[in-house]
Amino acid sequence: MKKLIGLKKTRSAVFISGTGTNLKNLINFSHKINSPISIKIIISNNKKAKGLKYSNQYKIKKQIINFKNHKFAEKKILKILFKEKINFICLAGFMKILSKNFIKKFKGKILNIHPSLLPKYKGLNTHARALQNRDKFSGCTVHLVNSKLDSGKIIMQEKVKITKKDTTFSLKRKVLKKEHKLYPAAIKKILR
Image (cartoon, rainbow, N blue to C red; front, side):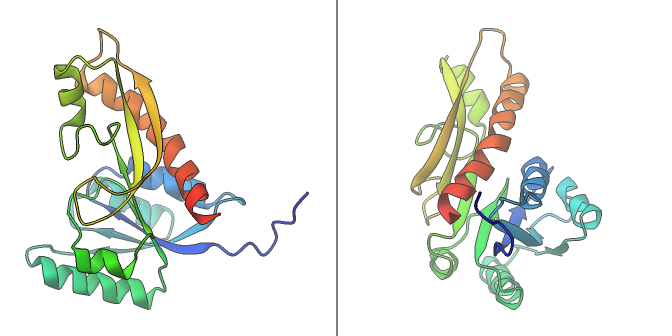
């Protein structure tokens, strides 16, 4: 058996805007012995983001950044990330688009999870769009972040079957379950 003692974990940040279910999942994953990440800071553009409660619960630093001035916000975030020696970023329901300049500083080290089978349904309302088009399948995608919305290199995808009974709510629930398995798997793939 390989010795896992002294396994150096990558200092990571998670960016959120909402409920933080993927954040909570990533925190639990980061506590596992075979996880390649250690979450050092949570960044949010929304001071009302429910996911911020996990910062207190798990004793992880948090920063709320006002995005009224995008350039200024990104400068501030970069300062924080460099101070915390962050080498890897996970976007988990982060509702802001990062600039080319920002992404360049972390090239190949920013992952995002998206609730559709990309390249289908970039952007918002993915479940409603999949149902409207009577798709047989939906799912989720983990991809590298580039400067185009939901267009970076796909790392992994997971499918879910859409049934006649599905609503946006039930589909969202099904996809979220898959997201919680897929995101850690994709992180391992990238960092191992």
